[in-house]
Structure formats: structure tokens, C-alpha cells
Amino acid sequence: MTFLWKSEDLLAAMAGRPVGTLPAGITGISIDSRTIQPGEAFFAIKGDRVDGHDYASIALANGAALLVVNEAKLPALGRLTVPMIVVEDVMAALVKLGLAARARSQARIIAVTGSVGKTTTKEMLRHVLEPSGEVHAAVASFNNHWGVPLTLARMPATAHFGVFEIGMNHGGEITPLVQMVRPHVAIITTIAPAHLGNFNSIDEIADAKAEIFLGLEPGGEVLLNRDNAYYDYLVAKAQAAGVQHIHSFGQHAHAAFRLAEFDGGADHSTIWAVIEGETHEIRVGAPGLHIAENAMAALGAVRLVGADLDAAADALAALQAVKGRGARHRLAIGASSLTLIDESYNANPASMRAAIAVLAAAHPTGAGRRIAVLGDMLEMGSHSAELHAELAGPLMAAGIEHVWLAGKDMAALKTELPDTMTAIHFPTTEELAAYAVSEVQPGDVLMVKSSLGIGFGKIVKALLDTYPPMDDTARR
Image (cartoon, rainbow, N blue to C red; front, side):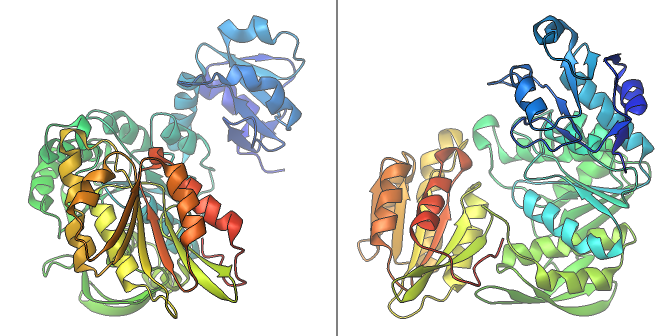
């Protein structure tokens, strides 16, 4: 059996003490008792809402090979006759294990941050690097104080590449995370007003994202969006941090990895990418200019870590958007179908505009409509009403005639939309979900987008539960 960690190495890395007879090793690491797999170690982390120690028995019932628990909790777990590693603090032990995983790894490491496109770019890198070797990347958006060390601790010693997403809500959060990851390549996808309620300006957001430079490996490389207004600002920040190798991607004439031309389709796009003077015509399996820009960042990173660029370019053709970030579903309705574009995971002004552009390129069938189903963008602070109202311009420019809204802040957008548009607003997500299920028509294309906390995943689920998928729908 191949172990992720031998038990002796776990003990050494975490400075823990064994209780009972430990297995020879573990096949994985979990912090969720519901999804743990047989042979994995369960780390009983205490979070803001729940304490993993309370779910230790469930983890065991689901096949946990051993438990990692706090010393102070051991008396309460005395009835469990199971191998354990006892530590002073489980979260701190996970960080130690993550550091040990990074120290033993020979992989080329890429870290991604940015206001928009982190997860999409991370998933794209996972996909395009696979032809070049074993890739380890975070699941979902494991990009915070527990997600990053967990992803590190899960990295096999055999990995050729590691791809890490690093997020933040406040200044100072990225620094300790990137110093754990120690990337060879650091990407900032873009700077935009996300989490603006926690900052005084977009400059402060740029400063926080620039913390990624502080953990770069000696001789490491930075990849920046040349089209973003903060490009020069970030270059200066990188230079001040001692970074010597700074590269760029985007449509800008001087971008090192240049998107020379973009031909957008309803469900894919074709791009012409100029890399080191050579033009590559590439099909990208997911639609949208923002996806094409992320693809340029991914291709740039592929080149910088020495992977196979041609194989990566070919792999982009099979790319599919992921759940909550552009995944498409063709659903049966009567004798026809409708298209659901699931953008329900997150939202800020930049990603809203990108999603509206994707909806504008979609093709309803028959008498179908393009419908923007939009919910509040959270953490916009005192700018919230203004930023929501400003979405009227992109909607009108895109020719979107049907807008279904929910949430307190989306009321500001409703007031800005002209009478020529069909715009409705509900106070709650649940009311809009019921309306969407009852009012959707054959041929419609619905794009559902909001911040995660608004719960627009309920709208997606309601539609998926009501209208069965067609045979070719599974585009995740």
C-alpha cells in the first residue's frame, strides 16, 4: 500500500505522542467526519462553529485509521479505543505537517491569488499540467488559514507540480500562507473591488494581494495581469520585495504571454496566444473572455515551471467550467430544453461583468430569453449600493432584457434598470427560487450569480431538482 504519510513521519513532523498502536501509515487526511475515507487520518480541528473532537466517533465509524486530537480533549475521548496522535493544538499540528510536506517535496509550486479568477485559474492549471506529470492542487477553494496547510499536508511526496490558491479578506492574511507554500511561481490574476468593505481603497486590496511576493522562493518568478490598472503598482511592489523575474499576461501589446485575438462562442472560445514570439491557435472548452485571460496566465505558468506547453494548450480544449463558477446544465422542459449557467459561488463587480458577458454570448432557442438571475455582492461596505446600481450599464450594453433579482442590495440595481427591461426583485433567495422554477420557459438561458452567502445555490438546486438533465448536460 502507498501511504501519504508513514505514522513515524507524522509523529516527527507534528511533535505528537502516540496513543495505542498506530497503523504503519495513512492514505489521506480529512477534517470532515462525514466524508472521510477508510485509511485516512481525522484531524479534529476546532473551528468557529464546530469542534472536530465532537465528531471523532463518526469519523471512526466511517473508517478513520487514526485520530489527531488535542491533549486537553483526551479525557473526553477515553472511551474510544483507537490509535491516536495527541498534540497540544490540532490546527498548529496541521500547519507543522504542511511545512514538513513542503520541505520534503521536489515539486514545482505555483501559487495563485487575485480578486477574481483564483479558483478557475487553479483548476485550469491542474488540468493543463496533468500531461506533464503528477499534479497536486487544492480541492474547492481551500485558500485560507486552514485550507492552505491542509492542502500542503495532503501533497504526496511524488508530486511533480503543486498548485495552491491563496485568498484573503483582510490585509496580512496572505503573508503567513505564502510563506508556508513557498511558490516558485506566483500569479496575481487581477485587482478589483472585492471585499471592499474590509478595506479603505482598492490600493489597500492591491497591497494585500502583493503579500504573495513575500513568500516566493529565491529566484522565483511572478506573473501579473498586464491589462489591469494596477500592473505598474504591483511591479513596483514585487521589485521592492526583491523579485527579479517579473512576467506578464493579457491583451496588452507588451505582455510576455499575449492574448492576441479572441473569438468567443456560446460554449467555448478560440484564442490566438503569442508566447515567446510564436503564435498558437488554441480552443478553450469554456466560454468567456475572462476564461481566456485566465488561460493565458495558466499557459504562462506552464512555461515558467518548464512543463509541456503544447500539451497544455491541447488540454485547454477539454476544459470545462466547475460547479458554481460557470458550470452549464442543459435541462429538459416539456419537449424542449433550457440552459442553466451556474455562477452561484461568488460575486464582485468584476466577476459580475464577466458573467454578464458570457450570458450575452449564449444562444437561447426558439422563443427563449437570456435571463440574468442576480443576488447581492457581499463585503462591498459603504460602496455597496453604488456598485450594485452600476451593473445596470453592463446589463443594458449586453442587451439583457430579463433580470431577476434578490437581496437587499440588489434593490439598488432594480431602480436603475429602464422600463424597457423586465426586472423583478424579491427580498429573499427562497422567493426568487420559487419564481424561477415556475416562470422559466423552453429555450431560456439563465445565468445565476451572487456571493456565496446569499445562497443562490438554492436556486440552482431548485432548477436541477425540477427539470431533469439532458444526456449531454454534465459540463462540470
